[in-house]
Image (cartoon, rainbow, N blue to C red; front, side, top):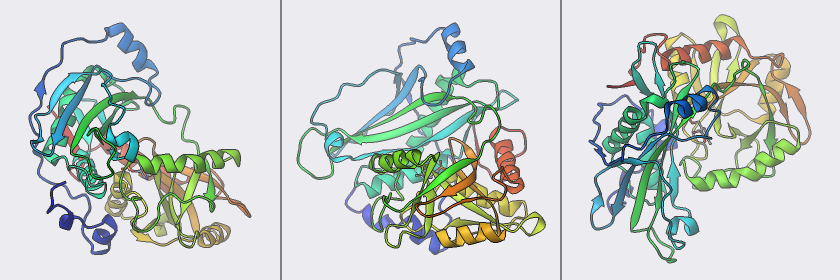
Amino acid sequence: MTADATPWYRTAAEMSKAGIDLYPVTERVAAKVADRSSGRLRGAAERARILADPGFGRYFTDHMVRADWTADGGWGEPELVDFDPIPLDPASMFIHYGQSIFEGLKAYRHGSGELMAFRPEANAVRFHRSATRLAMAELPEDLFLGAVEAIVRADAAWIADDPEKSLYLRPFQFATEVGLGVRPAGSYTFLLIASPAGAYFPRGVKPVSVWLSTEFVRAAPGGTGEAKCSGNYAASLIAQAHAAEQGCDQVVWLDAVERRWVEEMGGMNLVFVYGSGASARLVTPELTGTLLPGITRDSLVKLARHLGIPAEEGRISIEDWQAGNASGEISEVFACGTAAVVTPVGTVKSADAEWMVGDGQPGPVTMRLREALLDIQTGRTEDPFGWVHRIA
Ligand SMILES: Cc1ncc(COP(=O)(O)O)c(C=O)c1O
C-alpha cells in the first residue's frame, strides 16, 4: 500500500449510499503475462475423466499466474508458470497475522466455442478494495485482468464444452515477508489458480434451509466484513457448523449490534421478493460495511430493473421476514453468489421460530432471474450490459 492510497478508500457502503456504481463497466486493459511454463500438461484422458465429474474445488488445471510485490521494486512482471506447490517460510507474515485476500469468478465456453470470463473487471475492483482494507499492496486492475486472460487461454482445454460447467478462477494474495513484527508486510505474492467446476445443482434447483445466527456474528461495523479476506471465512466456520447441528444447510448472518437486521447467507447475498406477478419487487439488504458487496447481487439488481422488476436496497429485520412470509407479502427469498448463481431459500429456523418461505419450493421470480443471468453468462442470449469479457 502506498502512503497516499488510504484517502482513496471509501467503503462500499459509503459509495453505495452516495449513489456511486461500485462496479461500473470500464475500459478493459489487460497487462501482458510472460509465459514461463514448462509445457508439462496432464494427459487428455486424465483431463476428460476429471471434466466428466469435476465437483467444486477438487481439481486444478496445469498452470497458475504469479506476480510478486516488494516495497522497493513494486509489482514484478506477471508470469504464467506450472501449477506447483510453493515453498513456504514458517515465519511468513500471512500465516501469523492473516494478511490474505482472495476472489472468485468463473470463465465459460460459449456455444460458439468462444471463451469468456464473467465481469472480471468487477472482481479486480473488489480485490483492490480488499487489499486497501487489509493494508496490503494493491494489484493494478490491468494486471488482474491480464492474469485472468492468461490462465483462461493457457488452460482452455479445461473449460468443458457444456454450459452447465465452468472454470472457477481463484485469484489470491498474501503477505510473504518473513518476520514476526505486527505491521503491514513489505512483500506480497499474487497467484491465480483455476479449478474446473460442475453444475451446482446437477439434479435440479433445490431450496436450502437456513439458520438465523444470533450467537455468532460474521462482521462488526468498522471491521473487515466488506473485504474478501481469509479471516472472515475462518470466523464463519463455527456458525456454519452450528447451523448444520440445527439441521440447516446454511447460516444467515444478522447485524452485530442489534442481532435482528438480516445481512447475508454463508458465502452468498440475500434477496427478498415482495409481491408477485406484475407487482413483484426485489429488496436486498443494504451495504452496511459488514456484508460483502457481491457481484452476482449487483448483476441481479441491474438485470431485474432491465426486465422491469423494481429492485432496491433496504433493511429487513427477522421480524419483517417472519411476518412477511406469514402474510404472503414476501413471496420468495433467494441467495446469490458466483458458485451457485441463485439458490432459493425454502425454510427458516431460529432459536425460537421456524417457518417456510412461500410453499418452500423455488419461486417464479427466483427462477426467472436465475435463468436470465445464466443465459447471459453462458452466451445463450445477448449481453446488453457489457459484462461478458471475451478472451481471444
Ligand atoms: C460472504 C460472501 N457474501 C457474498 C458473496 C457473493 O459474492 P459474488 O456474487 O461476488 O460471488 C460471497 C462470494 O464471493 C461471499 O463469500
